[in-house]
Image (cartoon, rainbow, N blue to C red; front, side):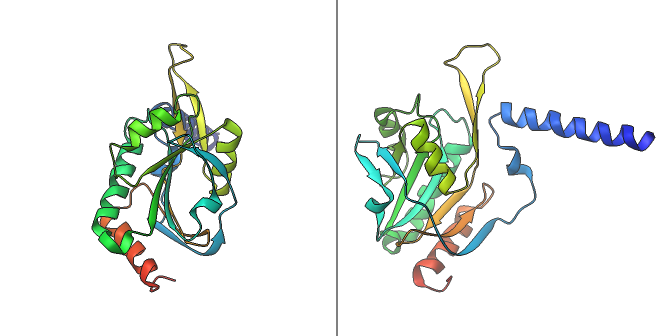
Length: 207
């Protein structure tokens, strides 16, 4: 009986912690033990169709021949997203000319608020090569599924439908020029480590 009570208590704590993490706009899986970077064998990313921050329709085919550094988030994100985009910008700066073939993408999971115009003003705060992508809810869901990214909308406690948070994965993805997912980085990966692994992949040593 005591053991059942103990287990029930632990489960209750985990549920409460999970709820707090979502409400705090911090993905629960950021706290789970995991590798800092996961290297894949060539794993193709499925074709997606979105709209860039200039209002132009784009698909995966538009980036053929380019490496992609990809992050899913939203412009109203208070901490995880700006940190990730700053880290990605630092990596691009540190790579210098060797990273010129990399296109950094910020894919919004909040299409209601993240219009192309709003995305444009947001990504301009980071690296000049950043491209912001948005679309319909269905388009974003398809793009997220192609990267196995999870996200969820959480209403604010005051009940205002315009005030809400998006819980989402915090991984950064590095995609090869033929559309294969090469490696993913957890939210705790330091820019120096990210840069080192990407540099190895660009030189062919990491394959």
